[in-house]
Length: 262
Ligand code: SAH
Image (cartoon, rainbow, N blue to C red):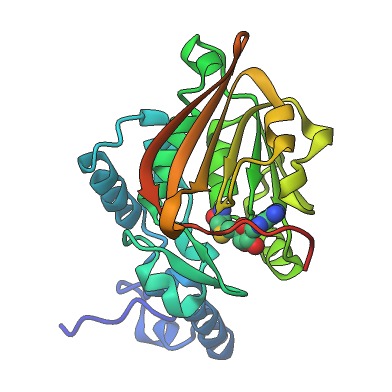
């Protein structure tokens, strides 16, 4: 016997032919439902956790060994933060444009920076990661990953268009511990201070004074900072009871840290 399609209604093969011809849902309604399903991201197959699991495997193969960060990277749907036209590249290890000349960092850079944040002295001593300040909300992706690993996330963006885009992207995720702020992140965000961690997605000439002032003792800053010849490197600053301890790590490439709102 010819196999009947399961759509638009599941057919009861045992039922008499007359019943089969009377669909349980109106055909028009069924067609509309299908059209909606095809327009949603599920239509491109990216809501499958398998795609993210592969990305996580790659991160682990690249040496990322923090299980909490790997789990967070595996749970946030990166394709929901980029334009539909770029969604099929969302789980590749590449930075992507997010509008207004800005970019979302590569997954391995996001994961690396958050893993570094979790190596703050207080966290290494066994305290959970408390309040984190993110400079440069962009599309909101990194804020969502941070929300999985920190108690509270304050994320500041200077471009109104991106601040609003992030708000829209994050709304369906209903993350009560993420606070989005339109402001100049070079001033930090004093109301949320002191921070257990400060993470910057944009690089300046030096670390702004405000970040150092708003960092808790035992806390850590992870940020790109300019080096000679227009290059940038990742800088980690720990605030210890004895003072600030700075380490310069690998070369990175981030958009510039700019002052003022736009
Ligand atoms: N974490 C983001 C990456 C955004 S790119 C994400 O996951 O999408 C870096 C962002 O930093 C840009 O949106 C840029 O506008 C922003 N930025 C640059 N200087 C800033 C400043 N002084 N205050 C706040 N945001 C700033």
